[in-house]
Length: 367
Image 1 (spheres, helix red, strand yellow):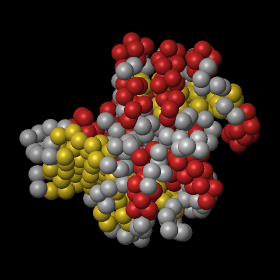
Image 2: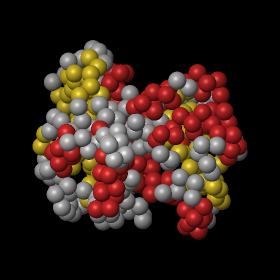
Image 3: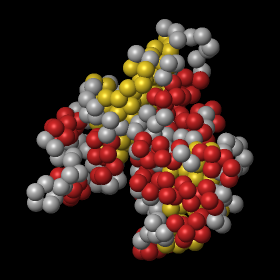
């Protein structure tokens, strides 16, 4: 059975490697012919080029494959999902934008009719962290009240430098997206939103702490709408080294996140993105920290992951790509069969997914 990987960057390359390791035939496609060529040489796979805006060509490209892993920018999520449904191809992506996921959700009935699983939000967070938290919720006995569900996730340099203590792993547009949009939470049992880059707290973490955590968008995926009324409080926060979040909060308050052009025809966000792209370091050893916990019935249960670069892939690439490829493998083997548009926390249980990550060295610690 064949899997198509759209996008051969950091995450797409990790996806190709793991799908091959799991025994699947893989075709890699990229908009950039040179990037596709690099993938062909690195992984010895068939490659193609594509234009994500050419819907007919996209459907034709997807048609021969049983599944597609989409690592293209999130704004194309609905277009690629529609093409996958039309081709009867299972689809996963790395999501991260609630507006795009909502548009993909509108395709649910079409996906069911096509017998296709369409699963956005399949990365680290949203994705793996939500599966962990949802698994903890599922383990609470019937009738036991759940007072709090919390997720804290950070992709960090192992050795922070500069005032931001941060390095670029992806396009900075994704970072600013998380820092600019409303953050979904459950508060006092009801669905709510809060401002990004707020609700700061200090988080202790052996070896790597102290860290700061603050509200960012997208990390709760669909959990707030699913569990409102069942959970008293639910929240996701990003982990960074101290000082990072307040600097970006200041930039937000000064209007530098705005996409509106000023009198000179320049959007402040474009200037900020160019400065981040030019100035932030890249390529140093990284780590990923994930902690999800639940307070219920007077006790606390916790799941935690620490991951570092390995097998030629950064920790962030590993923990973003490998949950998605593990899910694709489960789908291809018939272990998971739930047609429709479902985010990762809806499509697969922790019991099903988490053991599949052990073979790539991503271990979940229980506390």
